[in-house]
Image 1 (cartoon, rainbow, N blue to C red):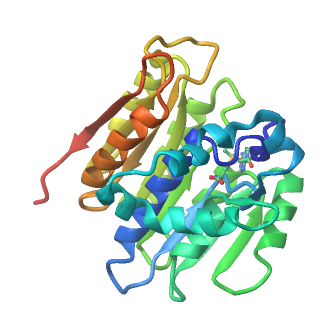
Image 2: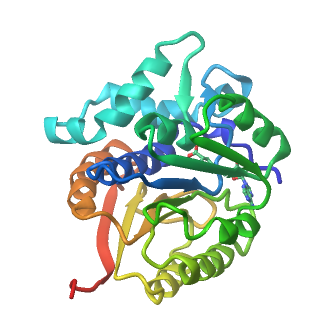
Length: 284
Ligand SMILES: C[S@@+](CC[C@H](N)C(=O)[O-])C[C@H]1O[C@@H](n2cnc3c(N)ncnc32)[C@H](O)[C@@H]1O
């Protein structure tokens, strides 16, 4: 396990995935009934943007920093406000911090909601635990997400989100996710699942999308941002998220957000948004 998220915190991929996470949580909060967030690949939860790792890559300067440089139109500003206000508060601290998905999920949920964070890397797992020492709303589990997840499903609340954000350092990561999702859906078919993935080669992305489209969710949304006009296998051309059983109207939110993010993160004549339904069954 070489991947450490501290090198990438606040980059364009984090911006995209954390806005998606925010919008899902906002929609889940529309009902008073409690829900659960299971973050399968949680990282440490909070990142110092002046730490050696963040300084070495400077990736956040082409991610969260651009949102400050080119503020969005009013509708998008409203959609991203719960995330962006949290970022602004933390980035104004000394040293400036960036919130990872667990921190964001903890910030955006209520007393009645529950959070489970899984992390396999022993050092990052220990940091994550250190960041969430108080409160019975949060449970941190150290270990392999795919071994832990079946035992967490279905959650007692029968409402909520499984947020899946693997490091993609293994060759067969797409297959592992597809298999993990298949197993998870057998235990809890009505949950919302959001999976992040990198776009390097389109062939593997298409194969993954086809496989996910066969899962027993009524509606499956695909949201992708390609930064470059020409895709090259040796770089991160963009990234995407597939959301199974997305909340009502999430697609409209992501259309507005995507129209803002695509030109913001464009490189070398690129900047393309793709938003479509892999599956959309009408409610009976
Ligand atoms: C992309 S980072 C997560 C970032 C985090 N979701 C966020 O948005 O702030 C992926 C994390 O998964 C962890 N990881 C890698 N393999 C794992 C596994 N099999 N189970 C759980 N965590 C794993 C890595 O150590 C890393 O911290």
